[in-house]
Length: 282
Image (cartoon, rainbow, N blue to C red; front, side, top):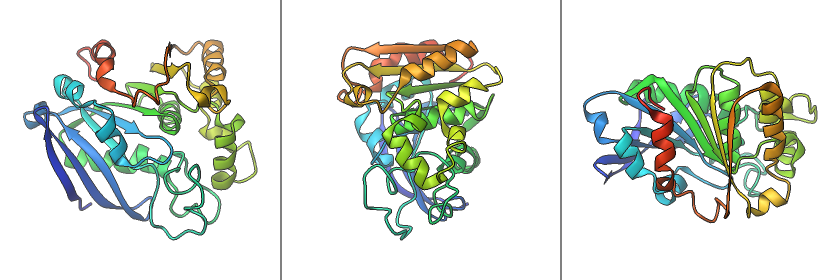
């Protein structure tokens, strides 16, 4: 599949690039960002996929997070896709910030008019990794995923629905139980229809209850001053309770401030990167 390079910038000895391609799953042009560390010049590196939150594009993470130094030091290829299809000319796709454009919720839609284009789950778990593996020096056996808010939800469900595919999953202020929160109810009813039994297939709290027990390293970071936590949009306690019942290991860290306000400066997580990578990759 042809890739068109949109930009390339030197950063901490590596290259921050943005590409565009014609997506088979989404039936539109899609952009994704990829950071190639210095180690990628001489060998294959672990691949770490980042999923952004509501309203974001591929630009938010690469311009705001400050991850490049840690990725350069640890030899990580970081891939950051867009959050939804764009320019599909679907009626209503641009009417609200939490549904449609910029709000794909990492599901495969089953309802008209969304089902043709809004297939972010398959894009993130199948099409994009195949594209990355074919065009960049990554080790497909060392792949992990992380994300923020809607993207944290996406990271959790991608890992839980694909045992063994990802070495670890990290989620920052994730939407943990979307079938019970306003954001999730709005998105799932639009993309998946009114049958709420179908929603559970994209809900981390429900997925972990039937997780088969394959080794998975889960980390959740949550800011206690996050307004969406107090508004009942995130519901991490429900996910933690389900993990505890199922005996699925999870590390939950409650931070003093709001992770949203700190712009996810991941250079602050260097110790966490080192502890989770070891010698085996992400």
